[in-house]
Image (cartoon, rainbow, N blue to C red; front, side):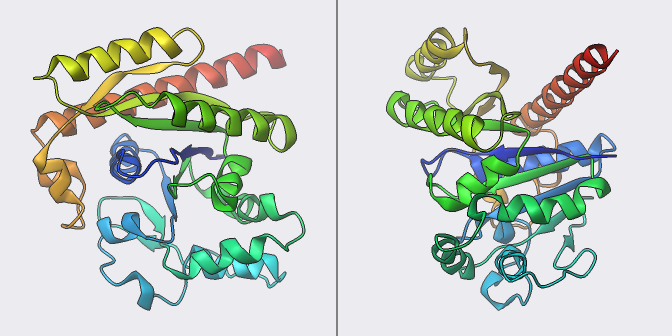
Length: 273
């Protein structure tokens, strides 16, 4: 077992990265996959949404682990990894991660600190998901350098052309200089309000603009008050509103992600013949 690592990334905040990371992770666990979610955002929204209401009081987080990697201090097995009662493991974050980002600037192999850590746990999981901070700084570059692929959540309320171009350039640069195997799994439309023509127009425009080069997931995540509530309950949408349309959408997204991985494995084995 060697995990597929997916970075959930968009330098714009408020596009549904954290919600997608948590619900996709738990969706994969419900399909029998072993999943680790890494919170790589100093704001720790993911850690809070998974029930750690006071992340700044935690002793061991991704920040302390990256510090150990930087200082060549050996790690304990499974150090800092917490279990969530919906079947996933997660590595929380807190505000200390901002200081780590600053110290990375003067670190040797600064882009690969996260990868060095993930390589130590990769064999224990089928999927590792990384919830990236809303920037294209050193932490996000670390996520891209250690990922096999990227999912880009995009809010359907406005056309994200400029931000998306910037992000695609960063992905291309990382692919060229640090991680030649980095793929884009797809753009995920989030917070789609199907009652408005505007949201439909944006979704259509995105598919027309990028659909030829980049997969746009068939699944669209609808706008929902219930989904917004989950971030304060410590539970996923599957626990909070299992029969709702958002839970259905995340189930469909989970199936799409598993299918992409199956096709990729098949392609790999055919090349290897």
